[in-house]
Image 1 (cartoon, rainbow, N blue to C red):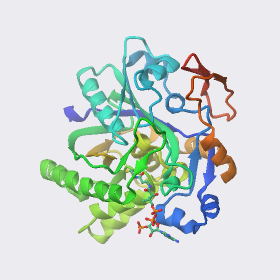
Image 2: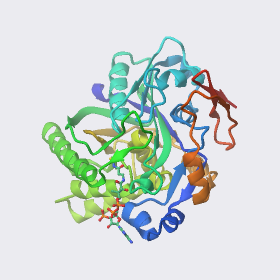
Image 3: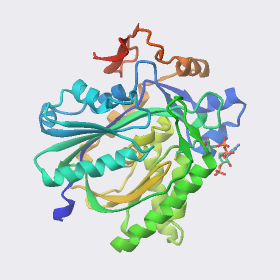
Image 4: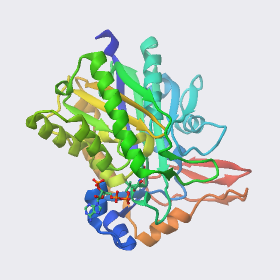
Length: 390
Ligand code: COA
């Protein structure tokens, strides 16, 4: 038990204040809405305004931190694949915006959608040796494939913030873990473009291939089997991908176990269905959704976690729900947050998509419009992004 006493103490998410309904997007693209709702498994897609980037979304997600937390945080680790600067880390901006004590490490990590999991384990190793201190992990991304591309329906934006601590309120993270790296070009984004390049079919094959590899290794090394898991959370770039992963994992399981895992999966995909792809935060958004929406979870239950980053790196690890895990989640607040977002037309989504910050050194000043934007991009001057809190 000594090894298990560190984990997730608090956790929350942020998504932009605007979304497009996937049925409307399907209609505009001349596609059967069932393809998006059922075939891909998405109902709504978050659309970020120009005033939200990975820094502001990360700060907005971490707005739950208390002054006591901020005084105890020794590391701010940001996982992202839509960074705003090749040199300066987004973690430094987030550290400043949140007012975290100055004697902290602030670093950005990158490996497609996987890096927040690396940040989680790095942070937990630190907390194991410094049990009085805390680590903030932020996963923040804007998923952009381009208008009228095959990846368009799997866009989205959002952030998840995770506070790591000893004797955590939400979940203990088991140090047993299986991970692997395999060099594959299934998804990438060269420096000269802000839109991802993807081989969607290869990506799906690699996602399930890596899952099989790390799951086999995990079982061999831990002696655990599917029956030891109450539920499994997946990286969900679109929810159907996770469902395909779950089907692989459930091969050979009893009908009763399959039904139970499917029910939990449906709870875990609810928020992703309404936000879309948040890249690095996606696995952790599915965990928040599971904890809020599932019925029957109890302290001591083991939750499997499958993290995948194209390119590719994958990992299977597990969490044990802590005694007070229910007190740490706020389903009503999360649902109210999603409900207060504004639905926009496909025309407005296209306009917001094309409304990007200047890349030619010109300056501009911005005002946040949506009430959820506590932190926002105030503008650009002298080639620097300026942020504000309201
Ligand atoms: N009703 C119900 N389902 C339908 C349908 C309809 N009318 N029309 C199509 N579908 C289903 C298809 O059968 C398919 O489901 P299946 O895979 O279970 O068979 C699904 O919808 C998607 O159809 P497909 O023809 O494969 O769509 P596509 O060529 O437009 O590509 C993606 C879909 C997801 C591959 C594409 O959007 C993509 O590449 N996205 C990016 C993926 C990514 O980000 N990968 C990296 C992250 S790990």
